Image (cartoon, rainbow, N blue to C red; front, side, top):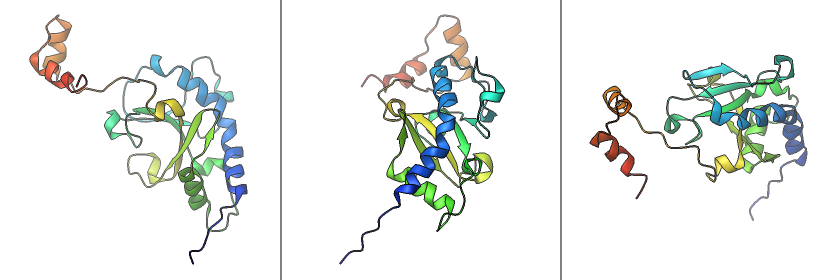
Length: 177
């Protein structure tokens, strides 16, 4: 007979309660996503136009990858996240990290924002565990954020002069199949 493991519903409540203060800032950030001016890759301080620094919950940051393919969440080049240590959850039998991982793997959505967990990634915040905030429709792919096509400098210069190189046409052809 297979043993049935019941997760404690308090775990979901605990994660949801500690994540809820981040939702207002995260939603505002995603509303401004398309206007975002990406100037580099890495981890950046969380900034939202029209929101004061004192209204941004502690630990909230933004991860930007060079391409959407290299993102921990495929096709999402930039996303807000918070290291789980900022959630200040303690006293969980079996460990806080394992509990958060389990709750997020099971699936948790708050106000249309999916809460996703990653850990041990060399490129993000000292390889620690973090929670990312991604709208459900973006994560599921129903909202088009665009396609990322690698362009060489010569191709970009040619396009700026009004010429469309055959190499660019070939790169873009894959999206109309």
